[in-house]
Length: 621
Image 1 (cartoon, rainbow, N blue to C red):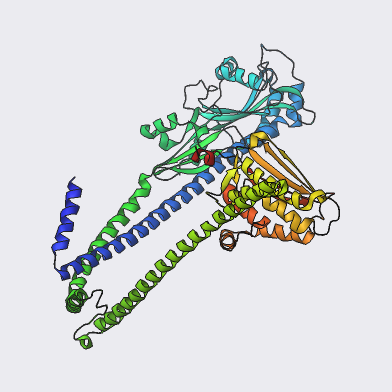
Image 2 (image 1 turned 180 degrees about the vertical axis):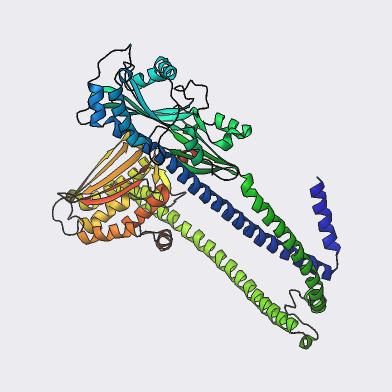
């Protein structure tokens, strides 16, 4: 309400303002509108560029981080595979005596020493693993580690669900590796600090034959290695790892310290996010799937860090806009003082212009170049206006003449009907049945074709009109012409475009029968096929020339709205040829119609069809 009142009172004040004040107001409004538009576009472009760059940077960083994590998992899995397939390891575990009550490697220290030395060759190098464990279902256990491992911890491991999960996981023969989610180190019960770890487990077996599954190799790595990868995501950026069931198994260091963002990750369903980076509101989300394990890595970046440079840029634009407004107001005041005097003179002269005085007369035009230009422009405009009025009067006169010609043309069919009625009456008096038949058929044809209406008619009426024409041709050629019509009764009340079947029959006499000496035959079939009406006209003439078929195909392929409009405007009463029928069908049915012509063994056949639409039937009640 307040805004409406402000606009109304502002409009009243502008109307009551002086001419010079109006110039200042309107010019300033135009200037400020342009400035606001340009500023808005520039602001939108800069903000979009900032957000786009932020998204690209986030996508690059998240993709790089996900790749590093995947590489870490790959290296651990590669080590596990090399150890699991090592012939020495496979041979040792194949020859172990099954005794669940004792650890073979404790009872055979020389064998254990040999295996540990072999494990050390994989482990004690740059970026080595926290622990490598070899074990089997008989509780035989040997390891190489950089962290403490206790006997009680080993016993706890074999009694834990972790060991049972390993057996269950590899019960499926199609499984080759297992990713153990980050968790506490149960192998160290010394009470000394021990970091959480994650691991990759593989079966110890002959990978050439795929047999002799004698144990497992588990390569463990400290979670600190993952923390190092995810520790440099940037300000307000977080990451978490989900397993294939959608459960959180790892949080980056920054996420562990932010409870608010952590709640978002807990409520998040990784499967609902597409792969890659997306923008939601002002925040960015990234989802990556690791190749080496069934894991989803979800990255999140808060939009608050992106808004900081945008806010600074917005303040700069506001200050610049205020300065531009001050400069514009001062400049407008100076310019209006120069322009107001000639414009007042122009206003006075315009008031004297009327229908009897279509000429602008300005005083002292020699002192103002602007007024000289305006004088010439307005007088030229008034001259054009005078010519336009004359053309309008001429156009209205021509339109009245066209209406008179149309009324005159409508009188001709009535005159012909009256003459036919007189001939029919005289023929009945003389007993000339053939003349009576001809007059009745011709009268029905004229009655049908004299009013187009909306251009549609019932199929039964259209086919009756065609039959009247064929009957007249039968009267003319007698035994030299035969025709046959097969009409589906369900099609009779369907509305189709008017005057599309009879012209096809007429074309048979004009073209198809010209060089044919046989008895001329025409067959008309009208059926309903699914939701379409189909009418075919077949003759036994000389067929259609390949040149016409090619020309007709070229016509259909090159038909446009402009060319269709020109051809229709050029149509005459005798211009209902096949191309014009094609254009009418296209205007009525769009692309859902049939208009085909082809040669047969005994002549040619033209097939027309279109969708059955009740719209025209409804309009007629």
